[in-house]
Structures are given as structure tokens and as C-alpha cells.
Length: 477
Image 1: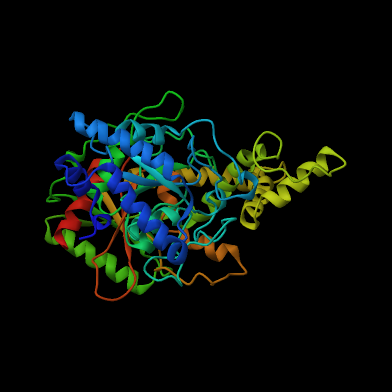
Image 2: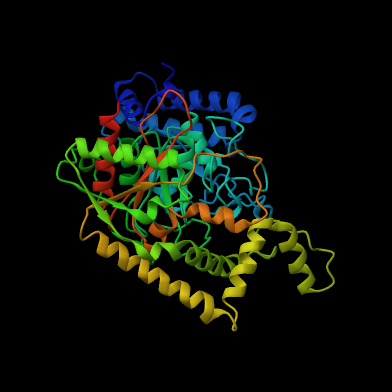
């Protein structure tokens, strides 16, 4: 077996046994990326061989000393909206084309302390606004299962890198499903933790009350190893929580688990193929001793609209800082006034989807629209939270599809952006509620595209979610 096909856990054991060094492991992934990524995937935006080798050699020294952290020597990729001191961080936008941050995000810091080695930064939808990775200013990423299809978004590059074997794991960000949906399309595991469980310090903001750094991995067990390393309280993030997560807690059966099935997450908008696959997975859980119970989430009919109003409002505020003066690219030197300078920089720096959401957000926050739209969306958010609290009184976890469909063609276009937004119906409600969710592939078949199923649970229930996910993976091996 090629070493790039091994799991994160296998790499950790092999490095400790001396089967290969961290430097050799990183070189193997670099070689595969350089050979395959430009012609097949376009998952990476920026890489630094020198920086990665330096980190790998440090990891080798730690491994030789013994008692090294679990992730020591493991290479990984990071979405390009997570700040890295030694590599460009552009959020896939022209307005940050050459931006190199002066610091690392907390998640990157924690992985450095573990001895993990960063391979490079992955492509994404510009400022994490999109679900196809097509709104990137620089390239389009292909689905590794079929290069004619979208990998999903906005963390499409990270999902593609993991699924294609270009990295053992990757960091992404999830605002309304941006880790889970590409995981579903590419056939890997996507973990969106409780809001605040992973520090947002160093994550370029899209919608601050929704953004979360998540993990893409080949299995729930691998994802648990990564999540346990980056779930640390951070005094630099006022929303940071304390979550103690041990990978050992994520192993065990599901006998006696109450698994909720919500009709609202199996609506007519979900394709019959996806419904059948997820309901078949529910029967696998039943065969393992879990109990299936019906739950109701009536406010979910309004969740997608509320999500786009709230996220766009926060985006219009967060993106006001990008003016071409303090950092990023600048193209308005010929302007005759400051207003014109801003107009030129922002018009040329932002793409179509980002402009659309800034305008929507500015509109819903305006004096004449605030009460009619933004305030009502906040009320819906509270209803969604209340519905989930009530549902979790009857069940431990809720099972649903991750996306209403499988991956669709890259060339597909829609004149109506609301039709694209409506495809987020299975993932935005968990984002509004701030609760954790995991997407993992349904049982693999000999033919057909990956279908993702989603497990969500109460706040800080990551260990139970990953235990249930691991149990399913073991059951269908």
C-alpha cells in the first residue's frame, strides 16, 4: 500500500515504530500533490515545501525523544481563510491576493505544538460564501470522484484533498454547512463542532455568530484525534468554550442510544436516493441496538431564509474592513476621491457572490428593513434553538441527510441564487442553533456517488457524535 493511502492513526503508529520518518511522509504527500493536483483536482492554492520540511524535521526530533503528541509528524492541509504566518491567506479573494498574516490562527498554533506539518492552503469559495468552490477568484476545484462534478463548498479544496489522498486530514470552516456538505459530496468525514469549542482567533470572518473551524478526515476516529488537539479554551476569543475531548471517548457501541428522525429534514426537496440511503443507515443503527424515535422541528421551514439574512448582515459588517488601504491588494490609485478609491478597490477586489451578500446584508440592516427582516430572522433563530432543545429531550442524537442531493455538475448554473441557497436546508439549522454535527458517508456501494448522512447532538456532545459515527463505520466495513 502507498503510504499516502494510510489513515491518520496508522501514520501515527508507523512514525513511532520507525517505519518511515515525518520528513519522508511529508515528501510522499508533496510528490503526490505535485503530480496529481494541477491536472486532476486543483485543491491547493499555496504551498511551501521549505516550511513543511522544516516542521517535519522538528517532528522527527520530537519522535526520537519519545512521548511525542499523537499528531506529531502528521502532514495536513488548511482552508485558505485560516491565518498562517508563513503562507499566504487570501480567503480565495482578489482583495487579499498577496496577504501574508503576521500570526497563526489558534488552531494552527495548537497543531504546531502537536508537531503536525502544514502542507499548504486549500481552495474555497471566496470568503467562504458559496457551496461549490466556484466563487474562488483563482481556480475551480474538481470532485475527486468525478472531475466533472463540484466538490461542494465552501471547504471544497479541503474535502477534495482528504478524499483524493493528498492529505490525511484538513481544516475547514463551517458557517452553514461548509465542512459537512463538501464532505458529503467527496465521500469523507466532516466535523462541525459546537460553536466556540474551537477558537475562531485567526479565522477570517464571514458571519461571526455562525463561523466555526471544523475538521475533514477519512474516518470519525481520525477526526476525533484532530478535534481533541484543537478544542482548547482561548482567551483571545471571547466566545471560546472549554471542551475536554479524548479520542478514547469516541469508541464504543450505540446500544440504548435514542436516534431521532425529524420529518422536516426528509422533506420533498431531498432526493429519493438520498432518503433511502440515510433511512437504510438508520436501520443499521437499529440493528446495533439503537432506538429510532420521531421528533419534530417545525421552525426548520424558516431556517434557510433566517440563516441567509443573519449571515449576510454579519458579512456586510465584517467585510467593511477590506478597503485596499491597510492590507490586501490595491487598484484605486488613479481615483480622484476617497469614495471613488473605495469603489474601485471593492468592485475589483470582491467577486459576484460576495457583492450579492454584502448588498443583501446592508439592505436587511437598513432603517426601513431592520424590523421586517433582520429582527424576525433573529426570532426564528431562537425558535430553532428551542425546537432542538425540545427534540433532545426525546432523543440523544438526530440523524438526517447532509445534503438533499449528491454532487452535481461543475458547469451547472442557476439564474436564481435562492435555488442554490435552498440546498442548504439540512445544514443551516444546526448552525443557527450552535450545536455540533458530523457528516459521514452512508454505506459504500460498488457504483454511484457518495451520499452523506448527518448526525447532530446537543452542545458539547462531540464525543457521543463521534462514537456513534465510529460505530456505524465499523458496522459497515
